[in-house]
Image (tube, rainbow, N blue to C red; front, top):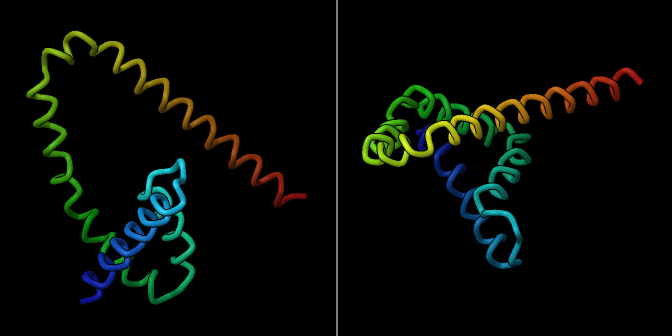
Amino acid sequence: MQALLGFTWLLAFQTLGEALSRLFHLPFPGPVIGMLLLVIGLRWRAVRASVQIAAQYLLSHLSLLFVPVGVGVMTHLGLISQYGLRILAVIVLSTLIGMVVTLLALKRGQGDQNA
């Protein structure tokens, strides 16, 4: 029952984010706004406990979420053979940039705590 409540919270925050995005014509997608609202909502124990159970369930079945991606790759092998190196370069560079930005943010956050 707790997992179902957790899924309900997740869908409620996503729906609220989508509604806010469309209502106020925000430049961010609804699920991103919903995720930010979820981060705020996780401060409450009732939300946190049920979402944690739902998240554990989703993580235990994470491999199933990659099946559509695998099928997509198999159906578009021509595109991958044509643009594969470019795609790989973009993936590697964006990962490195994300890691560097995360590192800088953590170092900056540590500096603020030490001050």
